[in-house]
Image (cartoon, rainbow, N blue to C red; front, side, top):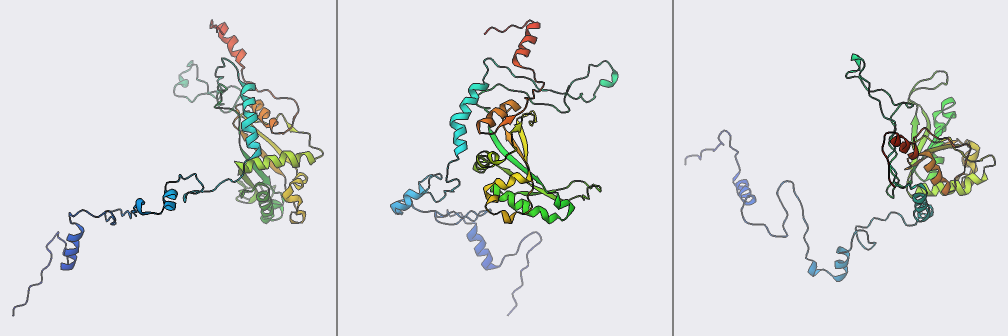
Length: 332
C-alpha cells in the first residue's frame, strides 16, 4: 500500500490540524451568538446578563438604587459628620463677605504686567519685555466681586524645621513627623535640603523637617482646635501681624516649640514628645487681596494686630479719576 504523502503548507499559508481547522471554522461561523454567551472578539468583554423580572423584589430595589444612597452596593462612605466651622462659613461668613466687599459698578483693576519697549532703539526689536514696575513678577488682575469669587479658606500648609536633624542626626525629624500626623490627621511628607552649606554642617538631600497639607473637614478641625484651644492658652500671643500677607490672599504665622504643647494630642502624652519643634502655618485663601483674607479669617476667630500694610494697588476711585481726565464720564 502506497504511503500517503505528507502535506506541507505552501509559502505564505498557515497549516492547521484537522481538529484545529474545525475549531477555526466554528469560531468564525456566521451563526449569531446567544444573549448569555461570552464575547470572543478582541478585546474580550465578559458581560454578565441577568433577567431582572426573575429577581426577588429586594434585589430589584438594590439594583435600581442610585450610587449616593446608603442602600446601594456601590455606595462609598466618606464623611459621617458635619463640619461646624464650614457650616458657619456657608450660613454666616460668606453672605457677610459678599455684602461687605461688594462695590456697585466695579471694574477690573489690572495687575502689574511686563512693559513693552518704546522702540526708540534698534535693539528693542524682538527683545523680551521689561519687568513690571515695582515688582519682580507679574501680578494677577483684581476682578469684580461677585457670588462666584467670595473669599474662602482653601487649604492649610504646615511646615516644621528640626534643627537637631542637622546638628545631631536626621532621625530627630521622625518624631516631629509623627507629632504633625497626630495634630492634623494627615501623613506629612519629609523635607530634604536642596544645597550643601558647610557652615551649617548641612549636606544636600538631608532630611531637615516635614510638611503637610490639609483640606476639607480635617482643615476646619485643625483651625477650630487652633483658635479655641491653643491660641488662647499662649500668654505672650497678641495676634497675627497685619504685615504677614503675600499680597495674594495667603496669610502666614508661626508657633514656637513651647506653644505646641497646648495641642490636646500633645498635652495628653507629654512624655512621648521630649523635643518639640516649632510650626510654620500658612493659610491659603481664595481672596484676591490680603485685607479680604484677614477679614475672612477674623470671622473664624483669628486675631490680627499691628498697622495695616496697604499695597500699591490702584483703587476704583483712582481709576475713575484717570478716566475723567481722558474725557470718559460714567453716569450712575
